[in-house]
Image (tube, rainbow, N blue to C red):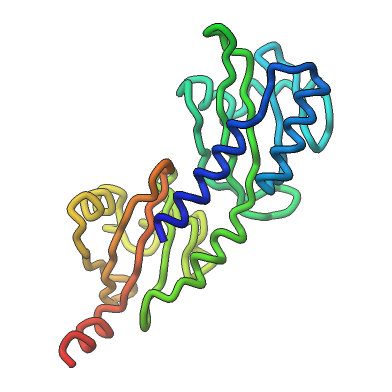
Length: 219
């Protein structure tokens, strides 16, 4: 599952990297449009350091996007970044933005970004068969929230909302040590296995019912 998630992200990043901003505005817009179709992005745009924007949804505009979190994060990190997930205001779909800074001769020219719906990806995760009374989960370690969970009401909620000790520190340690940990959820013990998704801030997890696993092992 982590390989599938990693390859999905890698492909989206590669399409983002293919956008050519060395052309005229017409050429840049064509490149943005091609990338949007290839990557199946919800939106693709280039925000310049002088406050202008080229956007596949709205065309050329004077919208100044330099203060947006994705712009500032990509600018400050000086590399491609993935934002925490958020709900789109218009569609209510779960989205992330991937953005990368564009430099010419070492000087920042702007930031190119793409908005991506996570709906199909997360449905694929929820459909993974990981065993009896077991579920696949995806966690955003940057925002410490659930991206995918068998209970939809927990999406974008903190991991500690289901158990105080379900902390990022515990998750990181368990992933580092490749250990299965036990956490009590609503007075029922659950086993958790964690694995990092390369090139992301995401952690893939499998939640297993402790009683089911113990019974299975004793048979």
